[in-house]
Length: 112
Image (cartoon, rainbow, N blue to C red; front, top):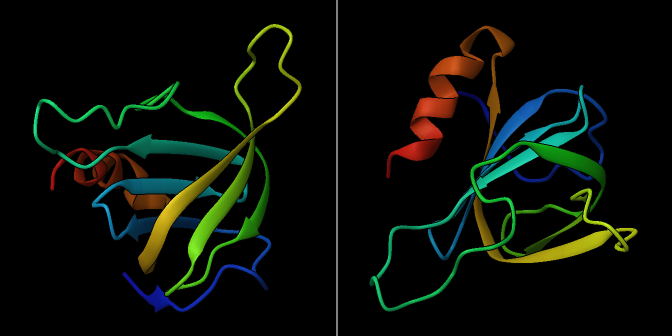
């Protein structure tokens, strides 16, 4: 998978973003969708976020550059909540995903 330094000048494509905490995000700019798998951590840690493991609507990518926290604006379709913003830990890597490999990458997203 080709790696990138930033998604800020990117309008299309599918990307696997890994963060310092070990969480992984599939960012689909073609369909404007996102899914997150949190890092496997101590069972006493509560790092879960609403809709983890589900595909959600991505409204915008406000920041996604290696070495900086990623900032996303999402629509989680929660009654009474117009938008949800997410800020991640520092982005460690961004890899472009071939659309033909999306099913495989979804499995990779689940495994550390």
